[in-house]
Amino acid sequence: MGIISCPFIRWIETNGQALFLTDREVYSPLGRSLFTANRDMRVLCHPAIRLYFGLTDGKEHSARVFSGKSWLPPEMRVLHPEKPTEFMKSWGRMWRDEKVFDEIDLQYILNRGTKPWQKKADEELTRRGIALTVQPTPTPSFTRVKKTKSGQPAGSTVSVKNLRKKLRDGLERWTCLDADMIIDRITTDKETRDKLLCPDDERWGWTPLNIFTHCSRDAILRYILKNLPDVFTDEELKAMLSACATEPFLNSVYSNFGPPYEEWAREELDKRFISRRKKP
Image (cartoon, rainbow, N blue to C red; front, side, top):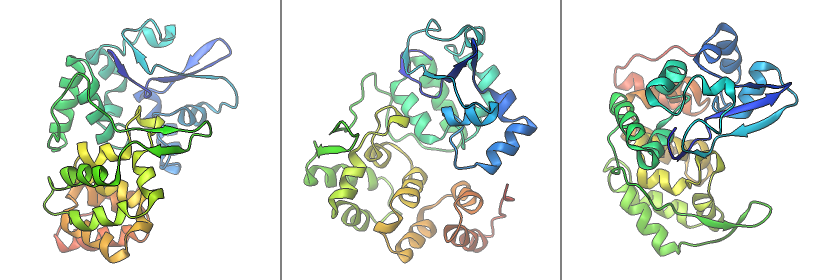
């Protein structure tokens, strides 16, 4: 996929062949059944491949940074995933599915991809009605912290003062969010601060802080609900959903997040006279 990190290009080598997922597997009756029952599983990762093919062994591979198809197994090379137009023939439904390629994936590609991939990410973000929060840049700066051998944060490279400034710059783009309250809640505790600055290997070195500074209000709310619910009171979380969540995100919360968020989203959708999606 050009010179960008691509952990969603994954396969498992077993018995002399490479197994991976395309639209054909993910949206087959078996795939729908498996991934509906395991809806928290990230379809782009190795466990999803193991689940679909029933694998207990095999060597896992990821094409994280490559400039062509030479790194790929023969079974994948023939599909030409390095070319956007060819990639869409085998992975197009996954690309357009926000549960598979979510906004964070697309924003990363927008900022780190080659021009053809930046264009594809731009088009998909526009199709989803997501305003771009940053312009594509060839070498963006990501906030990181050093990690110990155990993988734990070894000390933040960003001071609390600078962290608060970065958060404010990101949050004040969304006037519906209470920036002062959110910043106070998530910068008071050192463990929470380190969580914001700790790179996530599944997102190619992005830190959660980049979600606050690069992504939309829905992505920010999603991260807060999934990762920082204990930092906020129920009243504060509910108020954020009511004031700032878009209709697609509310429907996603209603369908996928479980209690108590499901009930809050239902109430807000009903208040706005918006029909709810059927649950899977």
